[in-house]
Every structure is written in structure tokens, then in C-alpha cells.
Amino acid sequence: MFTVRTVSDLRAAVGGWKRAGERVAFVPTMGNLHAGHHSLVTLARRQADRVVASVFVNPTQFGPNEDFGRYPRTPDADAAGLADAGCDVMFLPGVEQMYPFGAERCVGVHVPGLTDVMDGAHRPGHFDGVATVVLRLFNMVQPDLAVFGRKDFQQFRVIEYLVRDLSLPVTLIAGETRREDDGLAMSSRNQYLSPEERARAPEIHRTLQFMREAARRQVPPAAIAAEAGKRLTAAGFVVDYAELRRAEDLAPAVAGDAGVVAFVAARLGSTRLIDNLAL
Ligand code: PAF
Image (cartoon, rainbow, N blue to C red):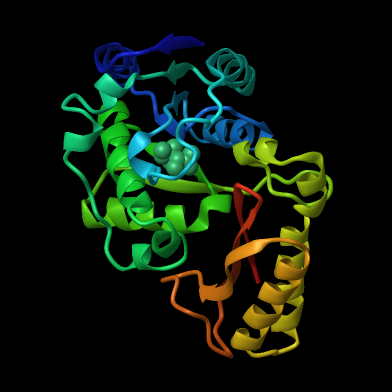
């Protein structure tokens, strides 16, 4: 595996593969990679001849009071992990490569509708930043397919909309959420947790399991959401949302809906965690 830092070096590598008829998979990341990311690279490897992974902590998807400054940056460890997982190229751009006119003066993308709820409502502008950087990355890498984690379910839906609405020639693949033994979804943000918070954090997964169980017992979605919120609050979380929505369009689930997903976003101290579980 080798590392490229500029769009022109990236294009030289990918262009050579494409001229040789090879299929290129892409795994976009913000770095500080863990086993969940590595499994996305493994999945990409199975679907394509070549794999590119990007490592870029994207300033446009962080709000003013969020963790952009302290987001862990570990490029050496990321390179080692990506190489082991079968990546061919790590794209490690600086902000001047991603945003030549500066992040404040960039051409932006807004995906309507899907971004009005859940994380879109609690993190204003977040998905504009995600859609903007993903479109740029797709344009730079020009992959045949791209792999994203299912843990960021709403993000996946937003990117699907982006791809479909702009007729981008990229096939999207969702990789399963990797969990610690106690059920906590793997996330770079888990390392912000104190030992005491880390011990409480698996309550998110337990609550999602409770939501799934209750839905199977035909408990109405609003009652499930209310009980889930209570459980998390009692465990010391500040809850942004705990609710059931339709996977298809993220509309609130109503009794009898098929294809429903339980979603939670909640904070422990200054750490915000998200997770979801398909029913
Ligand atoms: O899921 C992430 O890590 C980021 O939102 C992404 C897709 C790499 C865009 O910065």
C-alpha cells in the first residue's frame, strides 16, 4: 500500500488501474481507524480489484461546538491498519486539496428531506458537510463502488439520495456495524469515554434490543420511544432521540410498518454516541 496526498497523484494511480480494466472500490473515513473500518476495507476488497481509502477529518461536517479540534488523528496507525486490511492506496489529503478556496468558501451540497430529522435536526449543517465532502471525494477517486458503515444509517440514506439525484456512477454498499463484546458499536468517539461512562455505554445497544423486542410485541412506536428515552435517561444519558423510523425514507414508523429501524443518539458527558438496529 502507498499513501498519496494530492488529487493528481491519486488520479495517476486510479487512472492506471482503470486503463487496465480494474474495478475500484472506495472507503471514505475520517481516520482513527478501528476494526469496524477495517471490515469495510475487507468488504471492499471482496468486491473490487483495487481499494482506495481516504483519511480526512472533514471540517465542514462539524458544528462550531463539536469535536473537530479534538477528533483523534492517527495517520501512521491508520496506514498500518489499512495495509493489513488489503487497501491499495490511502488518500490523505490536506484541507487545501479538498477545499481549494477554503472550507468556508466551498461549493456546497444540500440533500433535502432526509436531513431534516434525527442527526440532521440535532447537528444543523452536518449532512451538508458530509454530502459536500463525499461528492468531492467521489469526483477525485472516481470509484466504481463505495462502502459505508451501517452504523451511520442516516448518512447512508443521504448518500444514496445524493448518488441517485446526481446520477453518480457509483454503486453503494453498506457494511455491518462491528460491536465490542458488550454490544457497544465501535466508534472512534468511544475513546472519549471515561471508564465509568464506558461501563454505561452498552445501555444504548440494550435499549435498541428492548425497542426491537417491544416492536415484535406490537407495542405502539410512540410508547416504545418514550420507554427507550426513559431507560437511557435513567442510565445517565442525555438523549437526543430514541425512536423508530422507516428504513426507506426515515419517516416515523407507525404500527404495522415493515422495514423499520430503531435509532438512538445520546450523550454521556461530552461524548455523543449513535447506533441503530433493524427490526
Ligand atoms: O462516516 C464518516 O466517517 C464521514 O462522515 C465520511 C463519510 C468519511 C465523510 O467525512
